[in-house]
Length: 440
Image (tube, rainbow, N blue to C red; front, side, top):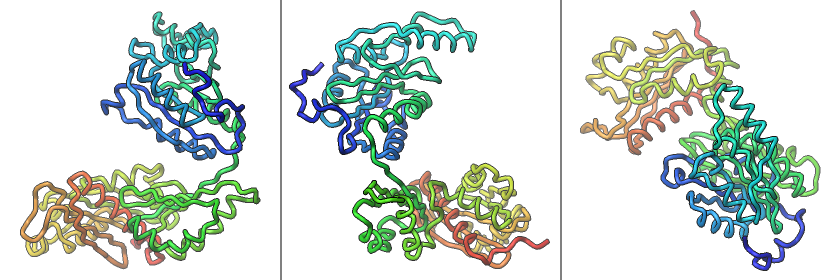
């Protein structure tokens, strides 16, 4: 364990700093470095820490080697006053974290009776024999504070050393999340007297990040000093996150929300929600509010649009069905696409996809229908249509509209972007007042 004289004066001071402490996240496990397991833990912790006003300064992944874990601990405490550690707390020989932490903090492992009783109860509940390695889950460093793991056998461990807090938690995501929620976040809030922080999220689709930034540049430049805007792009969407830190004035959130009308004036047509949500959830709200039904006709997306629409709870209230018309014969037989349209314009054309949407609307008996057709790749290009060409259509009782895009981002991304673009088109049309329920 490093000696006290290795630390700058700030680390020797008592807690309760005026400014929020920096946080480092350390994930332990060879499986992370080999890419066999995706690190979702760090994303969750970063999001939850930001909500209480804590900044993650660095995220590190470390192998299951004692010397490398020790080196990472030494480095982390030089950068941060809170170090959150996940992984390496299982019952097998490659799980070294608990043993390394005991040596690092100059302690020894002792039996924690409440944890032992908890582990025994879990094995009784599942009617499974308890092995000696399972008993060892109740061994903890003598100088740690034990954090009860309500949904697993490995407890969390809280260490306070030389002005730095170290917290060790299991790498199993649902166990880590429960420990963070039950113990770690409340304790950090109390110990460091964190100032209030607020986030307001605005979800946009249909306009790229750079174009969006240009449209709202004057609005962003006029933000108060304690308000910061972040652009968080994803497939065909950009999440705008406005973060406000406490400045001693009342109603921080109210003042943030008061800025939104001016934002809507600039990019209102691209905003699909003013909360953390998906575009399909926003579509769900519009369909239910307007009392409309929807159906899909898909070729290149192979049912992806229908899957996304039905991923929202309650979608049976508006989604009637979908037709995956991959072959031209199916387009004709199931959707009524005319042979002459296919012959003259081809399957990947605005003319064909318009007939697909109109045919789906008739066949499924829905108010609104959407359709896709395209060349996802890597093959399939023609003399007039390159790989990545995608045609999309929307049809309701008053209109049919279509669009053609050239995506060329590889097969998987082409289908993802096609689905996202069609959902964006659907939302934009539903947001208008012209759509009316089907008259029968």
